[in-house]
Image (cartoon, rainbow, N blue to C red):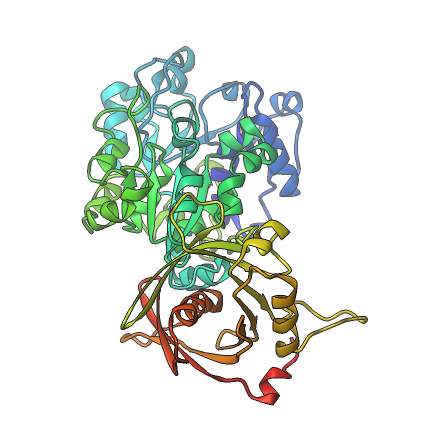
Length: 540
């Protein structure tokens, strides 16, 4: 069996088909790279990372195969000998690429590619919904005669992985924050080409304790720019705590974990719609999106994003069920796709399928953000009920009252400017030679070393801190979690609670016994008491 790959996008689609053949010792899987694509280099690198067997193109052309799988009709696929199963390389067939093929047909449904020289390219055109066969039949009945609805293997993986949502969010460090996935397709009309500053604006202007940002970039853009350069272009957002999902598997796990998705006209959003995630439209229009197509319909029912400050209004305008209704017009056979696909592919092979079930492979957890802000611009609002804290990455242009920085992680410029300095207890395994501090000793030394600092805090755990103020008072802060009515227990970042304590101690003449801290839309109680000798001697 030959996997004929033209781009990394196509390869990823084909890898999701593999469970159909799992455990069948009669099947030998080999890969070849179809020449002619601008995005072939990343495809070849991805095949090598998978440690799959490869066949040079010239050799692949010379010999017949029992079955050829491809996810793009373009290039020289017709030169390969054997029955060909053609899969979509996206969802919904919503784009047309001017200057290619017929010019006005949906990419993937273009008779110029499906019927080269008047002959059918595919023995099986695997589609995801009966409506797609109807669309193809309206353009070319001959091409539609080879089409069959078999579901979407990628969606099968996403649906099977829904129970891992909490695990993904734990690995990402999301907590109770709202995870926003920003997804950009490729090409000149994509979100990142039209609005390259948007990821950094969102990451720096959304309150850090309320929102987390994940960025999903089309594999073709990874190929065009290169992963290194793409990371450099996104560096301001990544430095502010955003994570960048990899182009294979990671993006899908992020959609499962996400609370909402900001999208252009790329088909990734259709998978989020199948999960009924709130979708926010960030597409300025152009020549690529086909009017009346699924993505056009999806964007029409999605509230628009009016700048980074308009996110909350857009989320409030979301209508539950509207996006899922559009996805239902794209994805049929949900939960049955691999079974249907196995039936059709083994018929092409001419052998009986395995008796074991074809199970979608669960998505691996995405990696946590590569960088976490170590310094924050902090805005506080105090009244008789307590202190509300909004933290932003230090380079934000949002107004703030003071800077809080993590000593030992933040750079010296931010540490010198910080009103609050804090340090976590060691979170790595100790080395053979090690120096540590007591909570009382480190806080005193820090205030001596940094005259501009008003409060130094030793973070001993998520619920216990020791703080020293400029007056010399040493206080123990015990932080209670927020216990919600549904039984969920939410713990705040202690550094955010310390920002509220720092602000309260600066303005309150008498030592409070408790401070109510409003963080990320939730209320946490910090109880203060003079530090005991034993607590001051705690090592960290």
